[in-house]
Image (cartoon, rainbow, N blue to C red; front, side, top):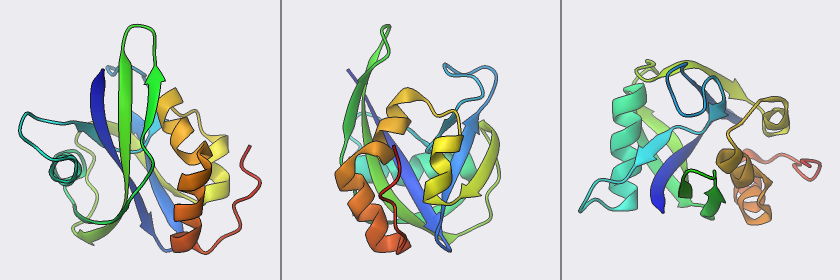
Length: 141
């Protein structure tokens, strides 16, 4: 099983989503940015490094979220999400095609990779997001 971290970055009651490029495993699908854990690296170190490498920004972790597992057929992944905020920098796309800042309610309007979709459909993760976004997110299915 491949273990991957991702960042749910929030700013002004919006969530950052990124669109994979054409050469990726899931071309042009949307995701929460992140990546694979290196040997000897903690989950927290991984997400901070991945966001610095992919978006050229520094983040702070606000809270861990509920991890999910997904079987894509050819690979199984465990996706470990962290709720984060930007500490410094301006987003520069290094590995992605595009990015958007969206309201929680708008997430369902995007073609997300299946594992990422499970993150915002998880009830506990919705509760964590509510705490930070101060929005009513009960109608997400």
